[in-house]
Image 1: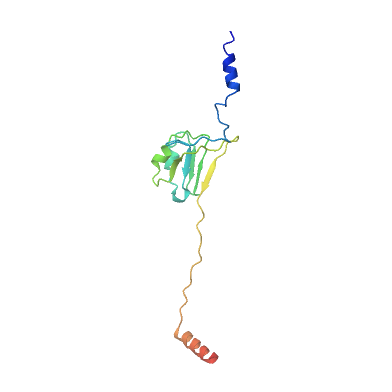
Image 2 (image 1 turned 90 degrees about the vertical axis):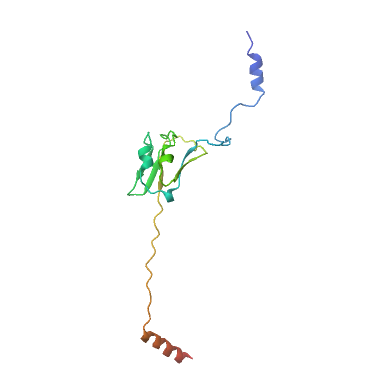
Length: 139
């Protein structure tokens, strides 16, 4: 009737069988499906990944150059990674951080740096003569 007593004593004096996640993380292993990673600089915002996603977890807005993913909806099927024409999507090996609220990760393209147009300075023969005359006065 008291066959469970040895099991209880063993469990009291042994280490726990679980990890204290997220403080103690497990090492990732090969081909582990963690989360979707995007290289936003090489994305062309074609929307192929959004159309391929079976649960509509990805939203692409071409006009705003933004790419968004709802990680709570993503089922990690990898369809978006396979169909991306620029191969800017990949599967990371680390899991997403635990959260207590649902968020949508939004990635936007960096604004293009606007450089002022360079004005070419041309010298005329009169300018060259003025410089030579001015240089001779100071000499």
